[in-house]
Length: 352
Image (cartoon, rainbow, N blue to C red; front, side):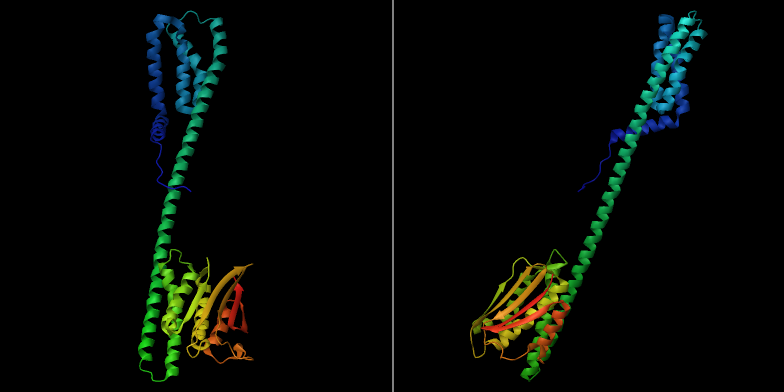
């Protein structure tokens, strides 16, 4: 993964700018170069004569370097005639057939030299343009990634704030229900208020965990069930009654779409077991287990209490809690089974 700030090649930028300036002022450069070449020719010609023609490759190389293949080929084609013209202008007497034969042989070599140098220059320019385009693309990509990261962080903070406010609102509702339940004399109504508080608390715990979690999409279900179990233990004073709640869940993470119905199911089944499975101070144990296999998940809640009476169909019960469990199982697109033996065991199976 690409990370960090892109640092452009300063040498490449300077060289590219230098060449672009010469390309834009090619006419002025050509005139200045011709003048410099003529002055060099004039100064060297009296010493070495027409052998000054060795300066011709310099003109060809310079043209190819600054103007590319086309400029190099043109300079290669005109280089030797230009030297011959200067020589004739200075009264060179050896412009005979031998000279012109050498000229005809040297011109192709001069053209090839200009083409080769120009081609290398063009390739260098192309590579430098591609390099600059790549640097620019990397800079734009880095900026886009930074913008996306900022947007993701902003949405995560917004989502955390939403979960925090939902949790606070649910706690306010629970507090209002608790205040109202203190004014109720009927034990049945007081218990109903307590059941409502437990259901709201079970959902509030999920939003609290999502608010504290790094992953705003999932929660660790074992931690959640343990928190819910501890809360129910405090409400129903299981430590004083000798009732233990065992949680057997390892490495299970659920999204909010499955965590809320599963949490409500656990709340209903554990609450029912605490209220009805251990009468007259009987001691016992409640177990909560969650497993996954073959694309299916199974949530099981069992106790070793007195169990349900024979012949009772929990699906036909007029209990709000059992009716709520049936609705939640349908929401999970799963099925529920009841096993009655040494206690009671509910098993809910649903797709992952």
